[in-house]
Length: 219
Image (cartoon, rainbow, N blue to C red):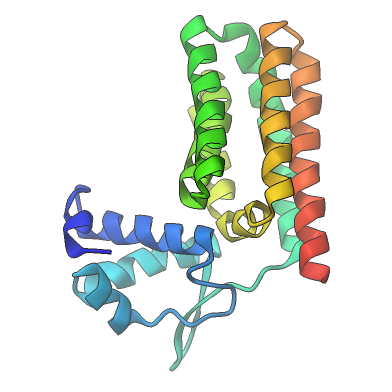
């Protein structure tokens, strides 16, 4: 990873934050691992100031934990925490989908389909970071179409808090195939105008992920 890549976003802090997220998603930074700031600052070609600011944002999301006199550590995974986040997501996202589906335009549906295709393409390439980004785009195409920015903002916070769990789920090839099937079933239901079926499928989609991660953590 070169320092040049990190000069493209508007600020160094945003660049570092994006890379820290990617490292958590892909498992480069594993749960419980210490975040070694000097090494990362050298790797990213930045000072420790934007790195500390990015870590504070991740701490607010619960993705890293600060321990006095020791520094930052990637948060350990906790099934109860995951279930709570996904329960809240279910409440918010089900409301968003019910509102969004009748409002979807053909352009919205095309973006949804394109995002699903990008998820599949990233899976085929084994690029978990790209797959995670495309999966997020798939879901937020629906959420944002509801026209409720406050709901979308709250949902985004919940998504940010569970990036590490996604890396556990996507690490299994069988899980990635399930994601493919579930996304395309959702698109089919939406195109048919079956709003409640889409809500049900998305609820199942979330529950499958939670249970799969829970099984993995128990092992």
